Image 1 (cartoon, one colour):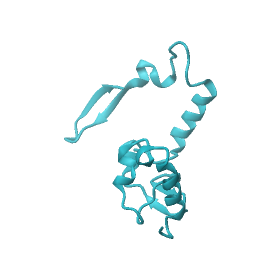
Image 2: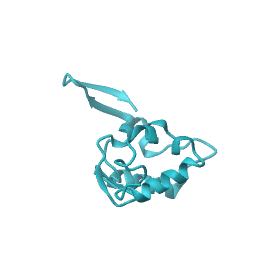
Image 3: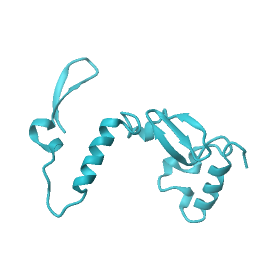
Length: 121
């Protein structure tokens, strides 16, 4: 067991007893990271940085498999999520939120050649 990843490796050993490859996602499994030189469990994140369960800090160049484009815990995203949580998250009927109105759904997006195009989101 490595000193740097002691807690992470203990948690991995425990997870392997109940979860195939120790995680729900193959791309985050033990097969993707070298044992003894990689963390297996992240505890928190802010901006582009993550901290593992052993307290080691990293820059997340993978961006959570490209799902995190604004960085972790972006203030605007966090505020919007918290506001929606106050209203509820799953309903019997569809809801119309501010972000789903047609006017706010029309976005202008740059493309690689520098031109602009519009797309419904």
